[in-house]
Image (cartoon, rainbow, N blue to C red; front, side, top):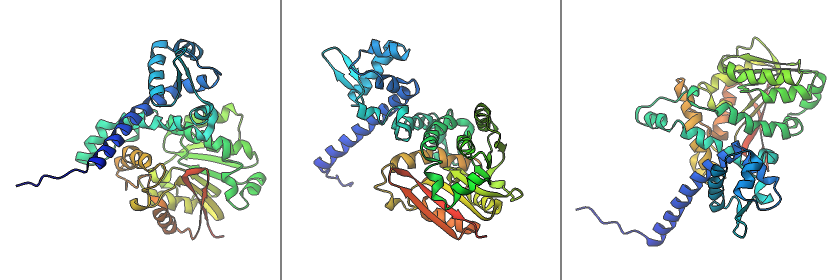
Length: 360
């Protein structure tokens, strides 16, 4: 005879409320992503008063019926404010500071795009749960575009005057002129930002996707850069034949099929006395130490539906985004790095900044 479990009514009610919050929040996130992509938050931030759906649609150049329904979702989610007197909607400035392109790295609306991107491969992910294997890059619509937008805002604000200053003497050496490579560069915006800031140095962006690199090449041409080049190459096959004074990776190691091979190649390709800046997810390698991570659920979920499965699709190790600082130190040490310093920034709970020095 099976036992009848007695449920705690208070705990049941509490969990029910949590599930309702997840359902509402999940759908709100998809609508926030749409609003970001069509510029509704940016438009509303420029309207100083509560406006009707028709006024907002006209200002944004969008279809009013869709804007009206979107506003209903945003009002019930508490993202925009509703004024019943004139059936008007307003984006408070405090909300605009976290949902508009003007917010730069603080634009959380940009992050919501990854929910739709991951949802687009849900059927494939379900199949992999049952049968193993992974989902390849080619299945992901807009991933490079969304990632470039998210990281680009960070590079524009803090790469030159913030992140690079963590490397002792880097700014001075870059000003004098050194050889630099960004591995897993994607659309190459980081390379172009650095090349523009340090015209005496020589920069190369390396990525396996020639399609992504085309954007970097086009941007370099638009900016008139003569010191930035791009090369299509497997990041795990750097053989040390070209030597660099400084190398960088931005949220790239954990996606690799062979992350150890990538880091080994970076070590081989650094000149003695050179530095590698690795920016990657800030986390512990142990789930129990990530329970209070402010973006833990988001990062584990994106990892399962993108980072980990993409690696597995190419017969990789499936390291995952939440590989953590302990595993990172192990991988770096195995490559030969003995001088590893980990930096964090108070306004960036998302990343660790590893500065790895190759002894001269």
